[in-house]
Length: 444
Image (cartoon, rainbow, N blue to C red):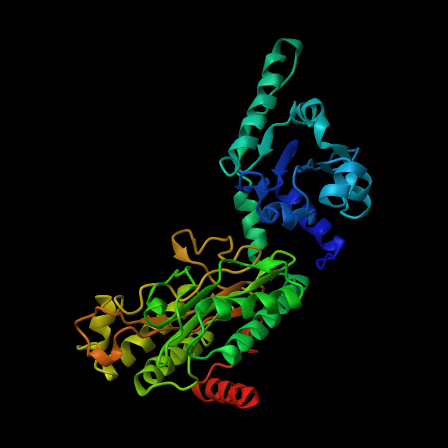
């Protein structure tokens, strides 16, 4: 099911072509199929730029945009219908489907691309293409250019220049439409249910992978084909490893569990982190750190609005976290001096968020002309402050060591501020403890 309407893909292509130079061509290959091992393939996931412009979900495809072309501006090379292969591998759209279902003006068999594409490139002043992202296709493109060059004596004209497509396309992707926000809300709602399910299932004696299984169940139950990224389920000291991936340690009584996980719907990502006690009750030290991170999370929302710049949310989290660490005795000194010297970094070493969309770390520049980008309606991002006290940190009392807390939400900039897409997951200490207590009561 295509959740972004066909008309929106057409509008995107039209908007991109309106920014392209006259007498130019844009070429985008689909993502290749990646081998997991021997003859086993990874689950196929379309290239995000290709997906953004046409929504075509198959490999072995090439999208070609030629603004002003009388015989059609949007061309798609794709696999032909093949009843025998479709019996083994699933249905294909074919050329008719590329036109009727995905809005191409014309479509050709991918096997004919060597015969057709050089003729479409020949005589164009400029080729828009993301060089370096697909080395195999880079080689094919150079071969086609060389075919044109070999015919120069017969009057063939190779293109004058290649221009990276990324800049135009990625700036477009930064601004989410109403349809995109709707899909992202759906992904966020499914992911919220998954986090709740993991909290409800948690108890000492289980392993991290038991909670990961609860996440995966809820993702698939909600219609998501896959997680948006590798889920992090980190108990105890593992929560202090930012990109922990093993997910196989036991949950111990007294541990905090940090889960950073989200699904994707129609290739749009959600990205949620919650931290909760494995046994359902925060210790005093865990509660103190948790509530400090939550205060930073909430402070960041106040700095996300049109006219604010990208870094203001991060600056707010640094201010709150540094002040809180002083209050708890984990840092000593004057607030502004500690911030200026980045004394907080051993505890809070990452930024407060990133762009979110078709990629979990989505495209778009954070600075424009050397200055932080000013926020505008439609931009989507995460807010994810954290505090991580290393188990071997000898500069703090033992009671604090090994505590890792991150709280992450997804937000979209609106005309008046921002909308939090991930409020469906409990976030306060009281809410989390009540949810887990109710789950234990039901289990009993």
